[in-house]
Amino acid sequence: MKSWPKKAADAMGGGLFLALFIVFVIQITARFGFDKPLAWTDEAAVVLYIWVILWAAAFVVPEREHVVFDLVWNSVSRRTRRAMQIVGNLLIGGLALYAIPASWDYVRFMAREGTPVLGLPFMWVFLPFVLLLVALVVRSAWAIWNAVRGVGLEAELRI
Image (cartoon, rainbow, N blue to C red; front, top):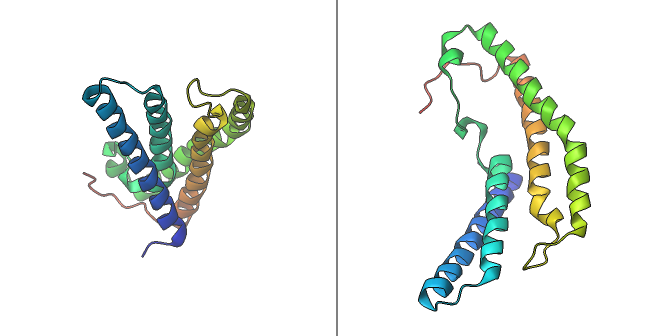
């Protein structure tokens, strides 16, 4: 059973993807059906694409669904897996945590600039990157906690 935050994140991701699809259909129809390309659809599609990818990576796609290369993972002992899990997540989470302040400063700075056609402040274009960094920190901390407790260290075949 999904929790309400997970349902909300999934709904937001689905809504973003639906909006991207609708903008894409409008773009194709205007360009090829009426021979009248619309500049705003190009810009909206790019902004929505950025949001869809980063939102999904941060909140929708579970960690077990991300691409992994587990040849080494499956060939080492449980104790080594625990060390790999802790060190790997310390690196990812630590780098993301280190990047948050500078990334947030840049995103806030870009609020003064707008996109060429829609005039959307660039802060709203780049905000999902900061959200992704925060999600990486939280996921890494959770993975470290689980590794310390010995959870999720099984060797498995992932397809």
